[in-house]
Length: 311
Image 1: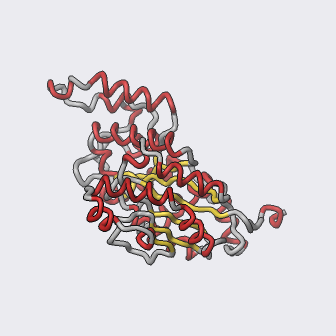
Image 2: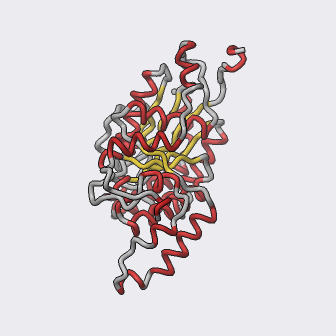
């Protein structure tokens, strides 16, 4: 029976499109996930699509700077960093043959695609969306892994902004999507959490967070706007988060499972696991509340928040 559950995928490539604002930890995630997946026997190719990434913690198998660099664009066209990034991605869109040829060299490997952090590229500019659609036509099954710095949870207004950005990105990219709260070890860097961690990961009842705004005039002016944004996010019922700490293998395993479930990856033809590993992977399900509680115990001060059940 077990053999019936195992299959190989020969012609289809799988991968992650790693996106998120600058400083959210995309490059660190790609380096950590590459090492983690390789320990499972999964052959990985890392693709750097950020022409401004000059602090890579991995050796890319494909690098957009072989095609175009942001420094050349800024010098030649007299553009700023934001305009330069947009131009680079639009240039890649017009020269997809280069990327297709590069991907042919790593066919059969699992892709980690490190993308630029400019938010506009995923909210209203169409270049990245069009690039992704071309990749899908190449039978590459991608999942968008959207990293958000977890310390935004300590500020109600920033967290609402993050929720709206995440929702907009999900709708624009039109991909299976996993939102990730990165750097969970620093989640209280700028203040204690008002609620337990599960409130921020599950995004169940955001009406509580509106009560966190101070009743000062500068904040009350935006009370109706914040309430409207909260209603939009809740009406779609799409946004939730998976906590991440790259140095913790158990947490990385949970992220990997969420991503594999999102794009349908099970076992590739180059990935080998023994029977015990497979069974533990299949039977390793635990209640989501217990998962979050474990992370809360590690990284969140017990006195930081209150359960949403207590208001």
